[in-house]
Image 1 (cartoon, rainbow over the protein chains, first blue to last red):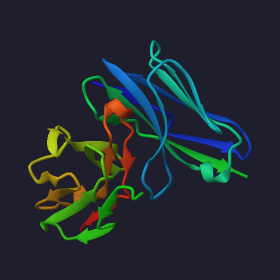
Image 2: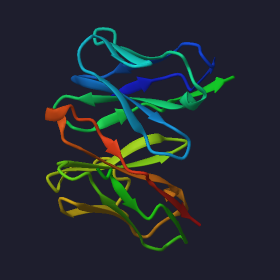
Image 3: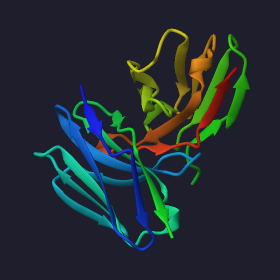
Image 4: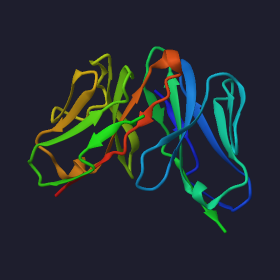
Length: 110
Length: 115
């Protein structure tokens, strides 16, 4: 089986930096994805990590440590539009399906 | 380029009625996924197809749910008979497959309410 844990809610201030953590337990890990989902909308792809280390994409970065079963999504220079849910998802080897965590709801305040 | 297309966007029906949800994947994507999202259970995979063939339907809740993919550009998810507990947002997603990274792109979803 697989367990994926994320904090349920986080709050932050506009312009600040926030780190959203995701821990997972799985056999046969084959990649971790981060998706953003605004209320009432579909999830949209943010980042993908399959090797250890940091992947940077503009204001967003994602880190992976396979030995620790740990990832985080780092959001810099927060904007009000970053208020959304952030979903961590894990893929196992020999399958193409993603197992999603329950998501972290981020609220950004002025 | 058009993304994943789903219809209808909203569906309200009465318990016992048949519901059919439709999905058109991104052209050229070989993989198609059906998900259900609720507040209680989050985003759950129901079934996925590769080259129109169902690969894993272990997430389909029960025999009332069925999915088909008659060709590369169309899939349906059918619920018969529907029940109030089926109320959820149903997403369809498609991807090029793990060889190309496996990123899944989601459609806008169908919000289903069963009264």
